[in-house]
Image 1 (cartoon, rainbow, N blue to C red):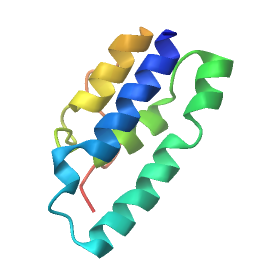
Image 2: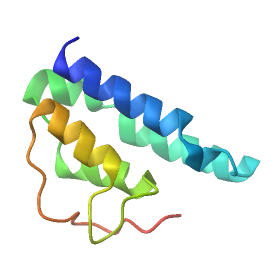
Image 3: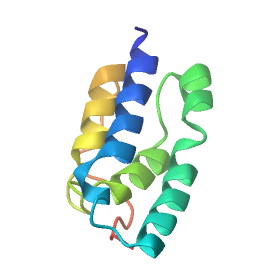
Length: 99
């Protein structure tokens, strides 16, 4: 499997099948689903044209990751970046507070 395909496959599985969504209420799932769509929809184009994700996209993903925070990258971004060979900055650079 192509490294970009694998990275996106793994990310989609983690975001949509993870334990974190099992206890969400309907309105939380709706909000999460909207933000997830925003975070994911440009990934194929970024990978095709640039071969990596811009920081704003990584931050949007990290904001949704239950293991991510303002001070450190969560498992989703670290795994994705490792798979595609992208180096992450030391810490996320935007507000990643969970909404």
